[in-house]
Amino acid sequence: MIDEIRGYRFKDPALLTNALCHSSYANEHKDKGVRSNERLEYLGDAVLGMISAEYIYNRYKDLPEGEMTKLRASIVCEQSLYEFAGEIGLGDMLLLGKGEISGGGNKRPSVLADAVEAVLAAIYLDGGIKAAKDFILEFIMNKAETVEKGHISVDYKTTLQEIVQKNHQETLSYHVKSESGPDHDKLFVIEVYINSNPIAEGSGKSKKQAEQAAAKAALELMGQ
Image 1: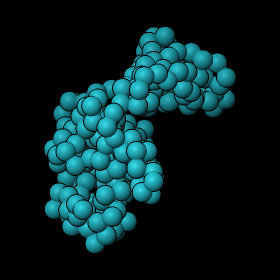
Image 2: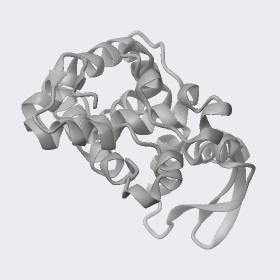
Image 3: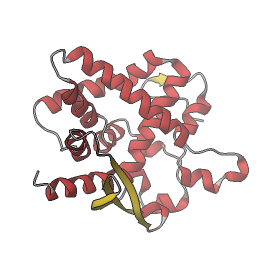
Image 4: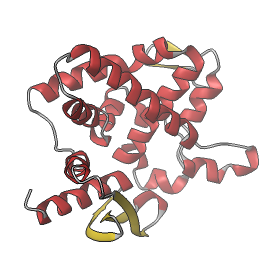
């Protein structure tokens, strides 16, 4: 059982094993009580958001709320987490189902980004917030510096949200229109709605990518 990652040694190695367990592997080993990392991913997303928000708040003291939100979204986006996963060799550690392995799941951005969040949550549960910060903060700092220099992809969802929020009577939501392909090679089509009206759609290999594509399409329709 693996008990260490990026210099952090687990008191409870089972937490790390769980964090590395993709749903495809868990489904193939249900009879052994194996659980996927999806619950840890949920917690890790919140922990990552909090650590990032705290760093941005303390580091950029004159940055307004809207700009802080954009910066945080850029730091914790799927592509950024995918890059971090590559830096720490996370793909080689993942527990994947046979179909996911044959489809190159250990190199797929959505799989690796989710695994980063799951590992962060496992470290948080095992060693507390300080251990979690030690694991991820250097990445956050470096990514923030990259953003400052302008080397960043646009976060279309945040931009669209800010436009829609100017009219308090309007609400923004995303809905899966279709989902196709095997587990290791999914294609999602997502529609973006303002109130109850679909205004644009986008596709991608993950829901996050499809949402960004839908938001980009909506912004183009608005002339943004």
